[in-house]
Amino acid sequence: MKSIKSHFEIHSRFRNGILLLVVLIFLFLLALYYYPGSVNSSNDFKELGRFQTQIDSLKKEAIKKKESYRLRPFNPNFISDYKGYTLGMSTEELDRLYAYRKDNKWINSVSQFKIITKVSDSLLAVISPLFKFPDWVKNSKNSKSYQKSKYPVKSFTQKEDLNKVTSAELQEKIGVPNFIAERIIKHRNKLSGFISDLQLKDVIGLYENQRDKILALYTVKTKKDIERININEASVKELMEVPYFDFETALDIKDFIEENNGISSFEELGKIEGFSLEKIDRIALYLILN
Image (tube, rainbow, N blue to C red):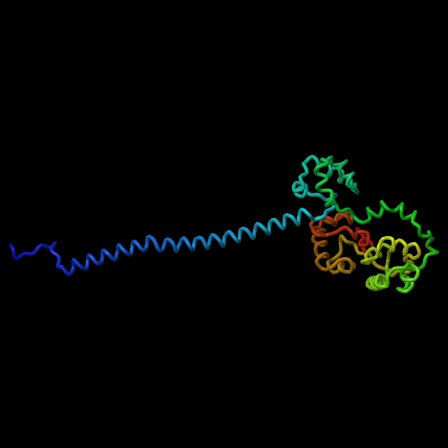
């Protein structure tokens, strides 16, 4: 019986090996507990930092877009439900505006906007600086003062032809600077001749009093025959023949007309994002509705 060894008996070399293995496992667990945690934590902080940077960038971009939307001038005749909401108008105020516009009537002043919509003075003070009425509205208000100008009133037959005046004549008779006179001639050549006195408005740097003085002595007498384009049926290529339209503008107009099954007035183009009605009186010279 003494010759039979217990199966629990372990040689001393094995005992030392087991002890060493236990120590190594303990040290490994200890290192795993402390070291990897710090690495993961460092990586987490880096990821959070990058994520926060992206969020801050998106916030700044959203703020810029919001500010640009708020600061952008607009025609108060074409305020949508969403636009009215962002401006702080109530549904009742918007309904009054839509009811007025439904009869094809137009708001042409800040005071008229207040009377029709009945917005508060505090709200009107905030949004009215953004109102942008068509240029022809401003001109209609100043029509009486034009008749009373200091320049001599001449009849159509007494006036000289604006399409034949030279740069030198504009400088001598009107007193416009030479570079402005050259711009007038250059713009006239670009259009292949003026078809209306209104097109003098497009000359950059020509002041209103100078334009009034020119039109007191000159007017369009000889003009080329143009075939006005039906805007409701025109193709993009045909719309690009209008001097005031580039490809993108013509494409936007074509899409807008197709979406709305045509337009009944040129002022409706003001509903197109980014389209300004400032030159609508000159644009209408080249277009018809039907």
